Image (tube, rainbow, N blue to C red; front, side, top):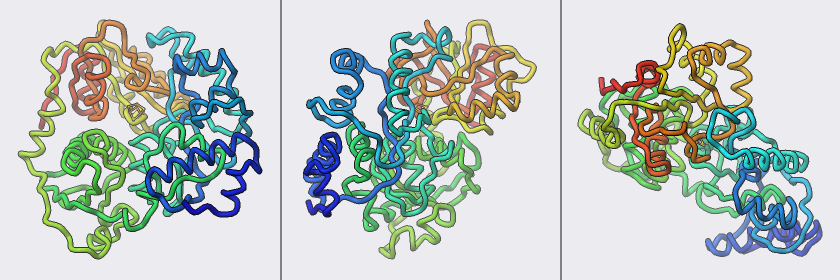
Length: 426
Ligand code: F3S
């Protein structure tokens, strides 16, 4: 790997042992990929504060510096962690103090995370605490090289914003925060950003649920390749694309897609494919739509619903508002709970706007920082849950051993109020 003078100096210890360890990690990572060089990043989204038993043990043995060295730098030395070199944010992590008494979640984890926030916050890690940093002010610009984790955020950054990031890990983002560098491969390179598959949509895709099903179909179809979407699609908004990308990254491993005329690197169909021949299209029609719906809903058998989960990826203000409208004047079934996951900063907006009050009056909760899949926590006794998220319907049954129903926000709210699933494909 070719290193610039400043990279070589960091590796040689000019900026201290922690930065040297970070650079060493990046060089090892890059060389394993046959990557020729590093690129400069000024936007890192990783995870430093997430509580875990291993982290608790390391903190007890050697303090927070030790925990960062081992977990975020893959280094066993006793080194002092300096401030981050470039803007770095914390993605989603565990539940916070406001979930105490609501979510069955260990108090020790909440305390550990509180301590972590204090340590890392003082070193320049912004505690955004959401899988959707782009909803709360972290909006990289087109062409900007970043080092982000979290598959749903990575696909949004690459596709909707035109920023450039691979799906990084805990250690590489820790090292990137301290150095402002990341191996320059994969999605950082222009030649790896052109479309590979064409999907022709032949049923109207015009709302959140439809975008989620289309994303699930596309991810399953292309796996880790780069789909280009054309056809009967209405102008999507942030929420639609958030849901589409998360679903495509769930059933496959999509990190980048194009929608000609919508996403920034695809002004035309030809541009989406970088001037190479446009492949034959795969159709997404009524038959495929029905198959995707049945696939996502293949878990459900009992229509008794104990738990309803909205906000995966974390909800926008508009989604919280829609849930509040659907719940206004109603009351949850006595044996059903409703949680809406949202970025803490947007929950503050929902609080000020009265949406949270409406939701809580009905018996629901707006929670932040985490989600049931991330923290492996659902209401005690949950056997069947309903969600408007293809991603949670995919993961939560495997993580918590519960059954899932997938449908629209309104169907999910109805399930929370009646305690029964009555959704279906219209
Ligand atoms: Fe976010 Fe959890 Fe979904 S971290 S993307 S709400 S699985």
